[in-house]
Image (cartoon, rainbow, N blue to C red; front, top):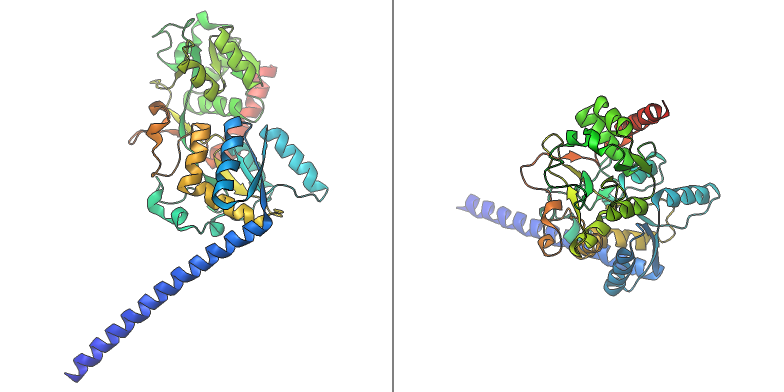
Length: 367
């Protein structure tokens, strides 16, 4: 009997100690969070670079300010121009930006240049670190170390757009139909020889359909090349070029909803559908002038509230699973369970394959 009572006493003591440790850990986490919020409020502001979308420029500063009373200085613009400016500033010892929301091309460059801090350890909000809240069952980091670049968006990307007043239903039933001589001179593409979406599209074609297909499409079909997304979108809407690669999806969707004869082309039997992340990758710069506010902003962006604000502003699919995406997103851009997608934001594809294809495209077009 004495031994039994001793065993029960030990078990009770172990349980009490375990509960105490758990309560202590929760209290420690709460203290860390409260300390971060307080430090961020003392900083008073955070400087964020991101896409030049007016709705993003409005939604993110308003949402973060309402939640924490901290000002977001939002700098929207071309990622290539922004990256060039940051490099020039840093070479002069100036550090003005805290957080970046960017695409895979910019993020791989920032990562390569070693100007980012590990983000994973700074994500401490319970709503964020709970793996059950994420579609992958965990936070989706894109970089090889799984530390620096968090992916917030993943949506089905249109292969291209068509003006349905010029291209009839059924005329483009497969990607190879683009090679029909009747479309020669009637296709416009984003320049595949420079880093960006044009290079991304050409690389996917190259990997999926081969060099011969790419040569026929980009050379034999005599497409018009442009580096201006707005120009490509205008050509599509006017029907100047009825088949366009690289038009602005948000603008096209808006025009389509208003009755313009434009449509996305996605489900092609000979081309695996692709997913991308748009500007939906987030990271924190080293030497951030408002580091505490940057950390808090990153936690907010990865929270349900912040990611929903971002997803609604950009009309992109969130990587969290607790956001009512059906209430504001077109179903065709939401990845379907059981479908195998080509991930245009795969790190290795972005770091190596795309650059190899870009150089090959320059060579082919030059010749």
